[in-house]
Length: 231
Image (tube, rainbow, N blue to C red):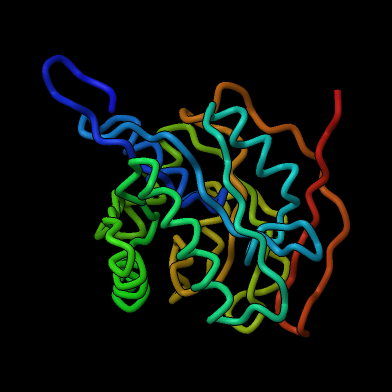
C-alpha cells in the first residue's frame, strides 16, 4: 500500500476498456488520495487479438497502458466461452488479485443498475470490492467535462440500429455531440457507440495511430480499424 501523509492508500485495479468512460474513471482514481491504481484489466478476443466490444487491436491497448504507466492484464476470451466461460476466467483473475493483496476493482459505468449489480455480485463471490468513480454523473455533464479536461477520443464502433454508421471514425468532440440525434445518450451508455481514448491527462504521450478499413459486422455494428503508427 502507498501512503499520502499519514494516510495509507488502498491498492486497486482499474477495469479499463480503453474508452472515454474508463479513462475518466481512471483520471478520478489518480486524483483520489484514498486509492493507488496498480494495474489495468481488460478483456479481448483471443481469435482476433482485439478488445471486446470496441474491436481495437490489443497492441494499441498495450500502448495506452504503457503511456499511462501501468501493467495491463488481458483476459483472453474465445467465441465458445459464453457467459459461463467469461465468469470462470474472470473469477480466476479476481482470485489471483485477492491473493496478491488487490481487494478492489474500479469500473467506468455511469448509470446502468443491472450492469453494476452484475459486477458487484461477481466480485463478491471472491470477496473483492467494487468501485464506480464516475457513477451518477449526468452524461451531458460528463461529456463536457471530458473535453474540458483535454481528453481526446475517436469513435471506433457504432450500433447502426441506434446511430448512423457515418458517426464511426469521427472525433468525440463538440461537433460530434452537436450532431448526435435527439435521444442518443451523449456517453452511449446504451451501447450506441464505443470510443478509443488516445490522449488526455492520464497519458504521458498521445497514442499514435492511423485509420484503417471500415467493416460492418453482424449486419449491425460498424467498426473502423485503427492501425498502430510506428515512428
